[in-house]
Image 1 (tube, helix red, strand yellow):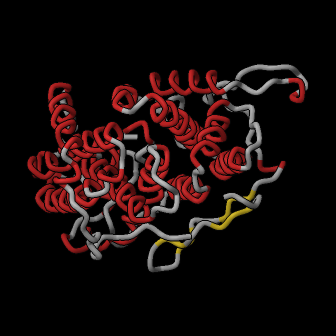
Image 2: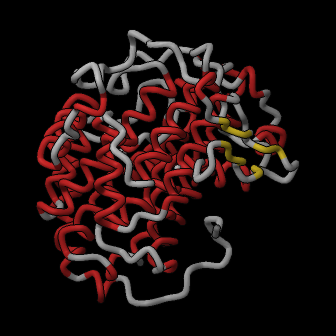
Image 3: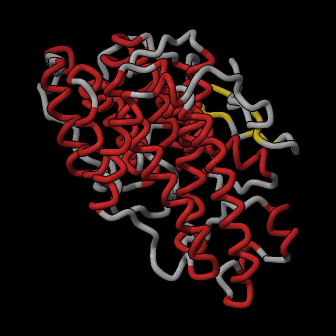
Length: 372
């Protein structure tokens, strides 16, 4: 249940990489080794890459307009919500957001054996899939033509924005966590996981919007937005994740309320589970509020998009808390009318963002993304 830019919306400098440790117990995500032997067999569930001459050296790389067109088609197929939200950006930022989305979507599809976010299945060759993602991402970040439109999209957007490679690698680390069926033991574990699968995407999107890669203060706020999104997703999807054998609620939270991870949805546990849903919603609200304070650093249309998205996802977390024990009877969604209202309200907030969100130190109690 990753954020996967499609829902809201990082090794690779060497051919083997070690992902940073997650959690106090020192559990490492693992090492993704890339070699000829680790390349996965062709999989019919994977979208076909464009055909070309038998000799790759004779194939001309897709042009930037072609890559943008491919990325736009990927978004239309994978996420109508992201496609609509991206229209709030200015044309140049919109195209770069599409290019970044296409890479995120393709990585997700490879990792989960799905097509355009649909048909997720348990895969038997997860290490080989991660190695494929790592190798292609490594090549794209090095400026090499990969001959896979989504990875070539990353090559283009990374070159145009000076995208820090660490963010892409950190997202891939999130795929490794899910492949290992990892579960958080503590709230700090949960937040680190949320960084890998969503906060890193927030940082990359900020760079796409024009934030300097060296502007750590604004990137921290962008990361906060990703954390808020993912926490809302987790709160909403507790039941769906449990049905799939996944649990993203920290083990120590569950222990506090006496709920076993393998029996979450037992009706007897609903009152306790409702308190955890509210706890997730409150946690998400804190990161949402922090993210809003980063919008004065953005151009108007980017700030508008960020504030609209913050409101839409914030509403999901708040609705989970409001429903209490019934939060997972029917999936929490935001109606089209509500989304339009949030977008309209966000336009006014973006116009007054300097007054609404004056400079203030970031709350030191909030979790802070790792620095490489």
